[in-house]
Amino acid sequence: INCSALSKDGNTLIVAAADKKIYITDLLNGNQTVFASGHKQNIGDIALSDDGNEILTAAYDDPIIWMSLKDGKILRNLVTSTNPKYNNVITKVSFLPGQKQVLIGDRDMDASLWDLTTGKQIRSFKSVYNLPSSYSSMASILTGITAVNPIPNSNEVWLAREKTIARYDIRTGSLKKSIIAHDGDVETACVSQ
Image (cartoon, rainbow, N blue to C red):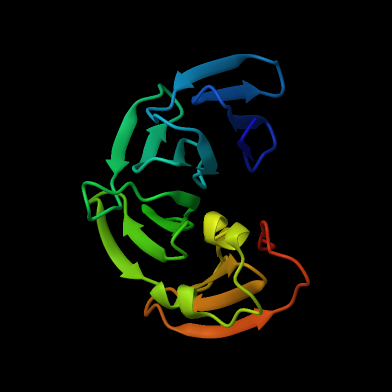
């Protein structure tokens, strides 16, 4: 199991496995549905929409895949790389609550906001790369952005890399606050509801 997501009601578990497939398990009756993900490489992150009907998957290959959980239909392949010879390695993905927008973080330590319906980038948070950092290690270079979390009922998002977490205004992309608050790398993070 590479990553997982749980529905808000706690009844459905979505798992991405090393075989590049998506496993959807109804935790009430044990029924399981399996879909091919459309990725050529391992899935590194998965996000579930607020209504529980769609998922986003991010892998070590570009694109991000937006998929219906009802039938496994791919709704969009969101290609984030502007260079056809270079696959952008997406490390984190998250739906923006209540919207058809996605926050992504990549191994190059860039973060951005994309419109799923048009497939176009809305905003970049490139200053994530320039956040204060107490060190730069090979592990952090390979990991990149480790968390992208929209803050519920606000216009802000938390991003993380290395030992740093940062809060951004999602409308402007401007940095609101950064904190170096850990002795080790921030591997993952979540925001309370």
